[in-house]
Length: 394
Image (cartoon, rainbow, N blue to C red; front, side, top):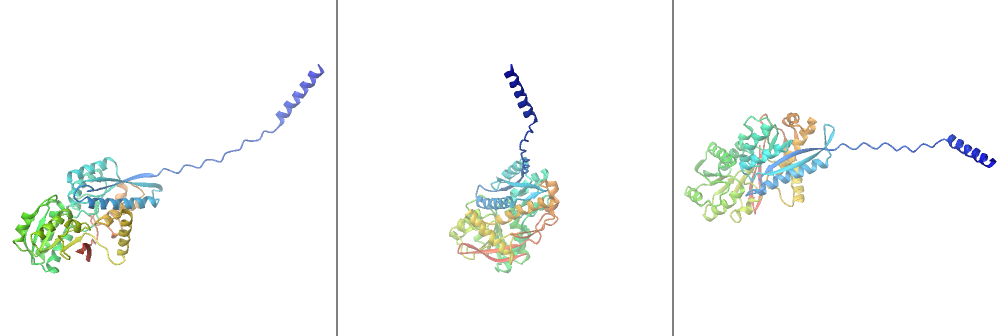
């Protein structure tokens, strides 16, 4: 019994000791860092002909957009204090108005915040109604038909001079500089080709020249013997073509085959680095004169030269024509969003209208219609298969 009593006392003592011992507090974990807010994805559309006869021009433009989007994302921009990521939604319109409107509808359904495109006036103009109805701003890097910005739409913008300036200047140049007394005109019946040819005729007439013939073809034609034979009989000093390089190249070859030694002129549609390849041996040095609807000079040329070098390093190809204008258009649209603090088209549109941006293509600002202010033209010719700049005209 004594043993049991001792054990009981010992157990009680142990229990009391245990109860009296201060428990050590469990270590408290540091509060977890709040997760970084997810970046808002802002979709920007681009449309151009990445298939068909002028796919080289459409791909050139699309690469300009890709380059701008990559740089914007690398910069880590915020809009309204929140991080953003830009996503490019690229569509092919094949330079076809019906496919262009289908592409526009697809981008609207995808809820893009803005669109860069299209390349051709013939696709840009019908698509612009779809974007306007949806309240989505559109910047065309290359559509030159004046109608584009004369429809009364609030959200349309043009990065280059229009056909009134381009065609008229070329007409004057043909008479006053090339000393042409007679000119013949061909157009491809597209909104762009017919429009620039009409303005060229007006420029020729205003400078005192004579249009001795007007013929037309289409934007997919390859045989021009009939119309060229007709024009050969009129002995023009200059043949002007309103259309694209994919048609101009074969036309030049057939002019040579027929013994037509006239100068050959065209607008920005033919003024590509691809034209000598398309013409094969049909081009003589100083035979072709054309103009890009845009241009830089002086200190601004350094920025353009750097862009061209960076573009070639990235894509392994020279700039065709309008990739720099697409690049700047993307940057201008993003800049308006940052300025407004929103990617909502209704909110950033006023900032887009008030754009004052220094880009690789020059100082960018728009007038009340959405046309580029103080738009330039770059007159060019070709020597040894390469473009040579003659002058920048404003």
